[in-house]
Image (cartoon, rainbow, N blue to C red):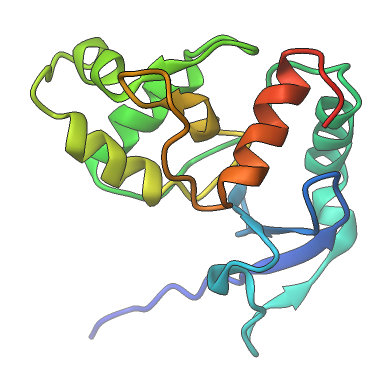
Length: 165
């Protein structure tokens, strides 16, 4: 006999300077932060809206957007492959207000030939902003793809540089 564990997915939508954000959690931790226009943020029938569950995450995001917070300390057990988790951990090491290239991230995780795979891991980042994939730029310093769009990426980088988004 197989036992299936059912985990409830909770959600809320919060306003932000870069547009509405959909936050997702399971019973234990924040598991998703998506831009509201991302298909992954569309509520599913089984999801339960629970704004109070996200009080701390929303407060930290509000402080970030107000320029009063540079790091996040909400529990984050992102779901992904071992490689993606390694990349996401490296992204969290990029200091606020700074950027890194795909190649720099690849070298930081000890896989200097993995620049393209770094891009794939960024694309699958389930916790935009909190895991700061917006801080990754092209080798020539150019803005490169961002799931939330290049305008949002620029806004986030401007915010972190102390410029008004």
